[in-house]
Amino acid sequence: MRIDGTGRIIPGVGRGTGHASRSGEAFRPEAPATQARAQQTSMTAASTGIDALLALQAVDDATTGRRKAVKRANLLLDALEEIRADLLGGRVNEGRLNRAVALLGQAKGAIEPELEALVADIELRVRVELAKLGRYPPL
Image (tube, rainbow, N blue to C red; front, side, top):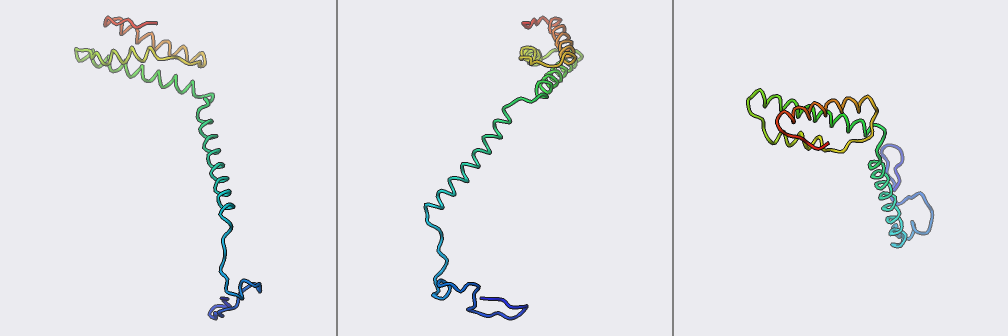
């Protein structure tokens, strides 16, 4: 079928003059082996891309240690704030003390010296508050 202009349709006239268009033979897809090979190639390429993304996520960048240290320092400050609120209320919650001890027990990463000193000061303050309440976490 050929569309000529804006309103005229001429049936039976095709582009090619090959044998297939004259005999009425329909389009024949490629052999199944070729299709399976193409699908396998695309699946391999997709899984390679995913593997590369996962590998990149597993690698720590330069800011990961800093980010973790800042998060840990904020959690320690939150624990101090909760202990202070409990002290003002007259009763200290054991769960909050245990949380502060657990935060002190977390591993420290290698970070820049200024940030490390700041986190050490926060840890010292948490240890002092815990010692006042009879808790002595290991160093």
